[in-house]
Image (cartoon, rainbow, N blue to C red; front, side, top):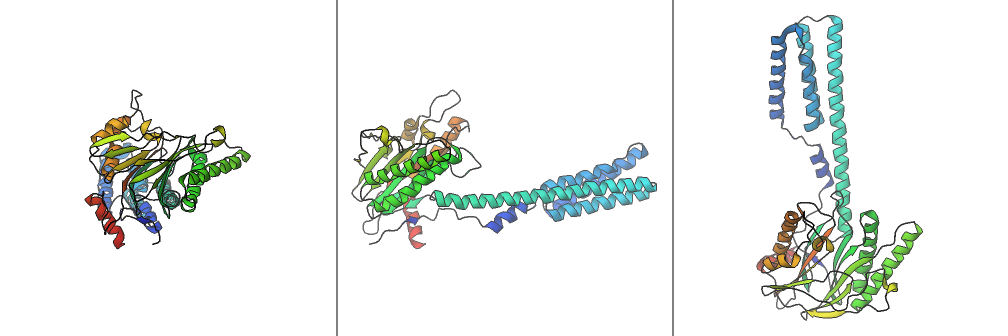
Length: 401
């Protein structure tokens, strides 16, 4: 039987480019509401101008209307408002019998102000459309770098939480991947030293190497060795360009159908196991140095095994979770919080974790956050033991699509 990666029906579809552009240029005010507001404002200004008399002209205040329309309306709506205001100004000045020069000055000022409003509206929409295009391109790039979650393989059902610290970037220095291979499902979660585009470049190098090595290498230590070589090569290239060399903490996992997990820990945070109403830290005794630093250690990377019972959830994360701080500087108590959610499914645990982190930090994050919640999904007679009903429904939706 061949192997293939399957995705659940919960993965959001890449937004359509034309739809994004249309949304960027759409009006925030309906035509009916806009007409009512402009007419009411016009009547108010005209009445004030009449009551005050020639001592103080209020009519020039009408040019505020196209200026405001340029912020909330389409170009067509803004042009319509500008034409209406210009017409009202011309008629009002003619009715009060302004001199030729006064009339010309008033009309010229109105036309100039209305033209600036229309120009501002055009520039705003053009900028919004460009941003929409960039976001669409960034979304497509993200899907090439980080696989959308959740993901279902023959061995694992993986949910995930990913939030880069920089809101204008969809990808940060934290990385993850789930690959189904002839040797079982292999998973990586990692944290690149530093932040920004340079850290992202190192992360991309590691992900590319993992996707290839996870299928090619027969052993998990062989996968880790390929990742080490990728970081070393990337650092050598970066050094030639005057950039800082970086290391990557990573946890590489291998899942098969025997209810056990193989792990190679490259300086990363230990995983947590949620099972039978209890949560515990999986103590990995053979933690090696981060990727890119093997030359500094005389010990070779080794793999070790631990049990992964049916129905258990294995949670792996980056230090953006464990080192999150509250206003007093206290670290986030991950194990204490997980104990509260131990009887929930993977998706519910991640939702609770996201909300709790937001409250704990007061919305102030200092690092990227990546979390994977993994549940075993072996297939026996068409069933996947250990999956909750909601997860099984997602798997059935996957099979249909």
